[in-house]
Image (cartoon, rainbow, N blue to C red; front, side, top):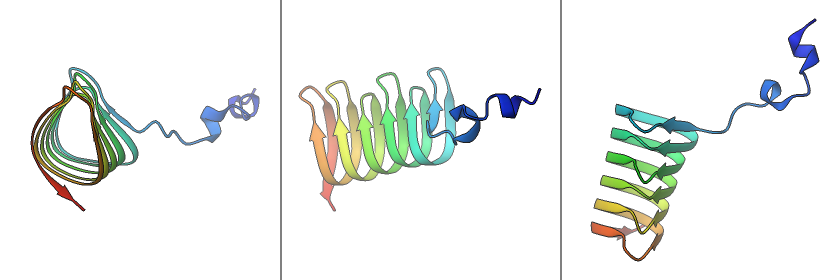
Length: 118
């Protein structure tokens, strides 16, 4: 029996994954990561991230540059950002230069930043 014919109507065989890129807790990556969809960081990244949406999870840390349509910071970030929208959660800690069109900051977030409206 052909597996493809048996499961041909199952989405995982016919649809490209859109889950994006995940840097899991305990992982450390140095370099440049580019994704057409989402990058979720629960580990450590030193370098450049470029994606439609980037989420720095509570246990995640990023040191470097970020270019995104939407950046969500729940964990730690240090560096430079250029994004259409930046959302910083109350648990977020941010140090650096933020260039943005829209920004939302929850009460309790720790900031040491220079803001630049684009």
